[in-house]
Amino acid sequence: MNQKELKELIEFLIEKDIAEFELERGDVKVKIKRAGTQTVVHTHAEPHFFAVPPAPAAAEVNGVPAAAKPAASVPAAEEGLHLVKSPIVGTFYEAPSPGAPPFVKVGDTVEVGQVLCIVEAMKLLNEIESDVAGEIVKKQATNGQPIEYGQELFAIRPKR
Image: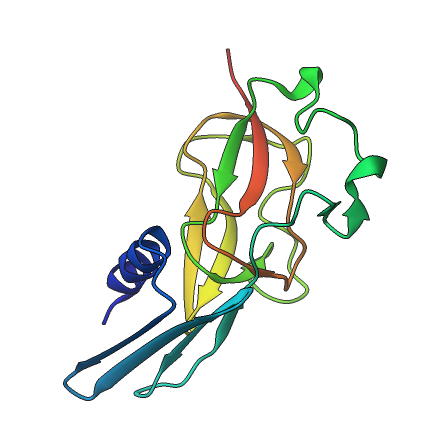
């Protein structure tokens, strides 16, 4: 089972609110179980576990009580920003190797197709490229952080 198929399967299960699913295809066995607040994916051919936390509750965002956050989730100055989201579950890496400079940093100008980061999933390094030209305004993940599908990684102010 390739990464795209696994991603589509997880999206389908979430959409249909299916709590447990098991699939055997040849020597590969995939079992997905959503227990309460986490989704766990396990493949028997090459065992890997990914815990996918749910979106933060309204009472708490990124570990900070909502009362401490501004009322608007996107301040007026940030309207019109393009958000680059993770296409897969994995681990975020800002550089091609440990000790190397990051692919991009806040304030950098990027072009379409420029590599922004790497997301490692199932021992595969997936380069995440910019799909818009502009300036990096925010980096929303930290190096080595586990990330989930659809999680915002970068905010880019598109060129005009």
